[in-house]
Image 1 (tube, rainbow, N blue to C red):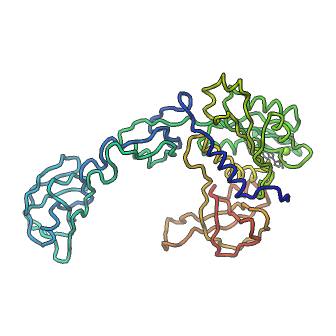
Image 2: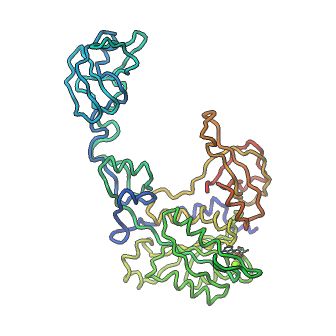
Image 3: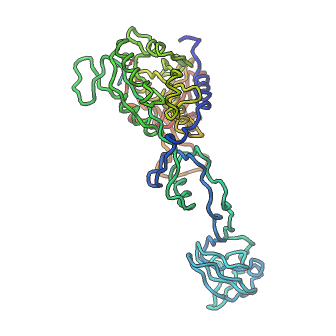
Length: 440
Ligand code: AMP
Ligand code: MG
């Protein structure tokens, strides 16, 4: 293992620095409007603002009686002066010595400063009184008008990944559609003389191309638009031709993922082919396993192309560079290096503020032997909230390695739901240790 290779942290820092320089996609081509039904997984291209105060009226959070807390807390009998259901306009003002029947979600009448729960009063038909064992303070069971947001407030900044909660918020604000960034186009090129299409019956020595569909799925899940190119053979000519297609300006790919051909083998020709295209590399290898040969670089685009192609420059930064990764061909290596390094670049190209990757903590079930000098990522199974139980507030999910035969073992990865991270300095982890995982 070469000491010149960056550690995982060093490589991740280089990726993060590169991601930070990427500008979000720009109008007109880089921004679109989509209905809420199509907004999940997209990235906000304009801030979401509150059109009204939230809530727009002081809202009861209980079924009960709106009242003045001081009067109710004195355990006086209060006359029930009226009733408001959810959907009715605010009533009031509330006379002193009176209470007002109210349902969850209904507007609290003016003059009331608390809602007493139905279950906490005695009721003689016309009047109510707080149970002697109970107290009531001003503000109880009421969400004040504007407590969550004020009209005009920025609720979500642009660059926010849109999920169910953001869609609910947009709907609350009356936004039936949202401005989102265009999905970055990601070229996926698999290399290798041994690769045959999924539909083919592999001859002895051949294997089906699993990396291309896997990476396409990873790209889609990370908010990109996968563009799967025909695989290239292990020859300079084949690679040159494939790169010509992948990097063509009118193809508009802001990111290129190449799998295979980056190890030190005789037919590993990806690096020289990228160099011919003017690539400069941030790293060619990292102290990780699997995925040690991973290559990350940028390919400048000729100045003339930039001038002709202002609109397409949306997915490149100021200098118009296209990012490229050479991912090792072994499927587990490809997946790990995508998640660790390519996904953050893709997130930046998609206009996201947060670039990741997102690690989590778990408790190791059985001890793990590793070897120091490389940060290792083992396919593992984590019991994220198994059974939906939270036995104790401080209980962490448990993680265990799945048995595997090395970085070609796709079946092991398919049984896993995360990678267990063993830091570079460790040659073993004891059962019960607090460990980092990278969810799949
Ligand atoms: P390489 O990185 O080209 O040396 O490939 C390493 C291993 O990954 C070899 O066993 C390849 O056959 C395998 N491999 C390369 N590309 C793919 C692919 N697209 N799908 C599945 N396995 C692959
Ligand atoms: Mg190969």
